[in-house]
Image (tube, rainbow, N blue to C red; front, side, top):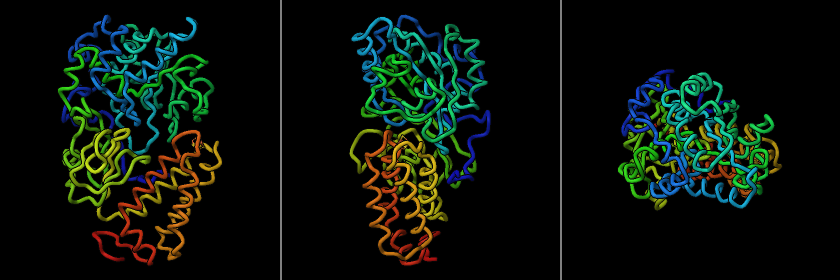
Length: 419
Ligand code: SF4
C-alpha cells in the first residue's frame, strides 16, 4: 500500500516550476514546432562519436538515481562494441519508469518536453552506432510519447514499451528483462549490460531526464551546461517535491548544488515548519533541514545525495518512526521475491519497525532490527535490500529521540509533545 496516499501527483497539464528553466523552457504541450522554436534544431554532426567527449567535458551525471558519469557509462558500451562483432551493434533504452510513488518528474518531462528526450535518445544512439532504440515509459506517458514520435523526424524506429508501476521496474536489468521477456524483474548483476544486455547485445539504459540533458548539451555545449550548478554538480536537475503543503506534488528544475531549504521554499514550504525531509525517495535518507546542498558529490556533512530527485517533507504533525514503518512495509511488499534475504528479511524488518512504531516496549527490538539489517545488506541481486536498510539507518539516526520514546511507550509526536 502507498505509504503516503495523501500525496497527489501534479495535475495533468500543470506548469512545472522553472527556477532555472532549461529542460522546461518550452511551453508544455507545445509540440515539435514549439520545441524547435525554443531550442532550435539539433545539428546531426554533433551527434557523432565526438558527443561522448562533449559529455565528458560537461560533467553530466545520470539523473535516474545512481549519478554515474554519463560519458563513462556510454563509453563502456562503445568499448564492448569495439571488442565484439559487427552483428553486436548496441541497443539504447530511454528509461522513463517511475515506480517510486513520490516521484513524478520523469512523467512531467515526458508530458512537457518529449522531443528533448527523443533528441537525446537519437543522439546517443548515433554516437554509439546503435541499431535499436526503446522508450520504456509508464502507461500514463504512452499517448503523449507516441504523438511526439509521430511528428519527430527520424524517430519512427523507436519502439515504445510500457513500464509496469512497480518500485523496481526501473532497475536497469529489470528494464532489459521486461523488454526481452515481459517480466520486469532484476537479472543476475554479474552480467554487465554494457557487454551483454538485450538479446545479448551491448545495451545502454539511460534515464529520460539524462537524455534530455544530452540533447541540450549537444546543442549548446559543455561550457554552457556548466554555467548552471556547481563545479561538483554542474547543470540543472528536476526534482519531485511533496510534503504537508502544497496538497499536490510539484516538479521543480533546480541548479546542481541547490540548497535543500531553498528548494522547499520554492515549493511553498517553510523549512522551519517541517520536522525532517526524505531526500532521494524510499531508497534515500531522512535528514533534518539545515544548510545541506543537493548534490551527489561532496562532504557528507554538507551534501545530501538527490538520488532520482525525490524530496518529501514531513510535517511536524507526522511521526517519523511511523512514516518509516509504512515505507518499510511498502518496500517489503515490493521485493521481487527472487532472493531469500530480500524476500524474508525485509518483511521481518518491517514487522520489527512496526512494533516500535506501535510503542512496543520490548528492549530487544532495536538490536533485532540491526541484526536483520546486517543480514540482508549486500545479499540481493539488486540494490533493493541495501537501499531499504540505508533508509532505515537514516531513520534511526534522525528520529533517535522518537525511537527511544516509542520504546518507553510514548510518542514524542506532533510538535515534540509526548503523547
Ligand atoms: S534483491 Fe529483492 S528486489 Fe532485488 S532481485 Fe532480489 S528479491 Fe528482487
